[in-house]
Image 1 (tube, rainbow, N blue to C red):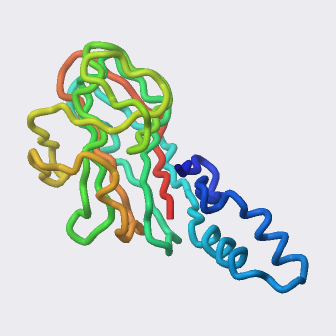
Image 2: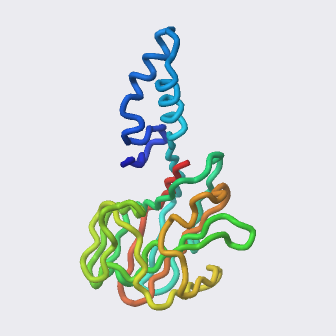
Image 3: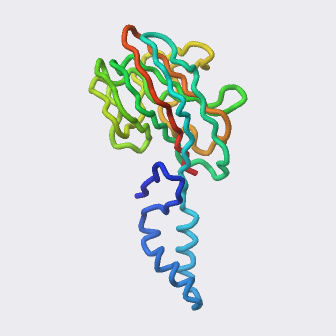
Length: 218
């Protein structure tokens, strides 16, 4: 099993049995002695399996009205410098506060000439309960965003419970078949402008976020 690195853009090896003796392999190479094929192959395997997570943030804040589109709409983040194939994308919502979580709809759109690939990380979650704190939306989280139960701070798998997802212009039309998870971005070119559309569908509760981040593993 391999553990994805979180915030820091620091390379970490996959935590599986193929790299269990990585340190011994490094010592064999550094000793100056002839390196047996097994250790050299093991070292190369561990290096090739290394992935790096980089974080790209917008901390200008998002104001969510009692009903309607947030300001700004959309909020943007620019990603650059990703050269390796993408292995994972995560969305971090910074200090999301709203009195009724189920009012919220969010649409994430990747870079592209015609709007890029879109997915809905959260929609109609949390029931009539308030949501407050930092949320990390991650395909590999152990918990799925709930429909009626409260959403606490922490890590959650994305979830869309809405039967229809119509976001006001200039958001792209996504219909009922928007991808359900971030895996849709794996292997794509993620460099460029990303957009997060936030919409409140029901009065009278308002809210805000201090910002959001993309965490991209490549």
